[in-house]
Amino acid sequence: MASETDTRGGKIDEKLTAKVCFWCGSTKFRRVNRRGMLQRYVLTALGWYPWECAICRRKTFRRKSG
Image (cartoon, rainbow, N blue to C red; front, side, top):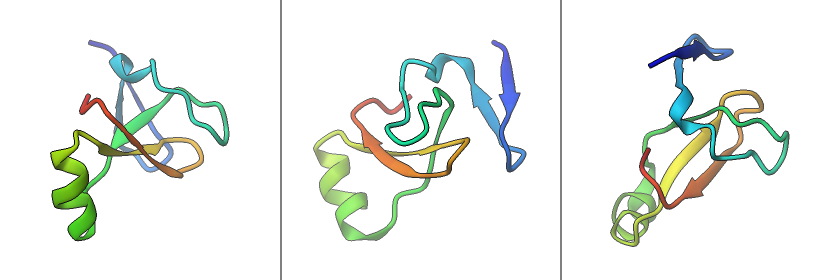
């Protein structure tokens, strides 16, 4: 599978291109670590995962884990 490098040197999988950033319109995302009790337990139990845009670095929550 082909992958690119983002602005911080991390790998971006091409299979993640179905997501579109609300702020910059980019289709390049990466999973980020959960922070706090709400993200670790409540949102995970509901199936929400934290993602970060590789271009503008804004975070969002999506239902798919990747």
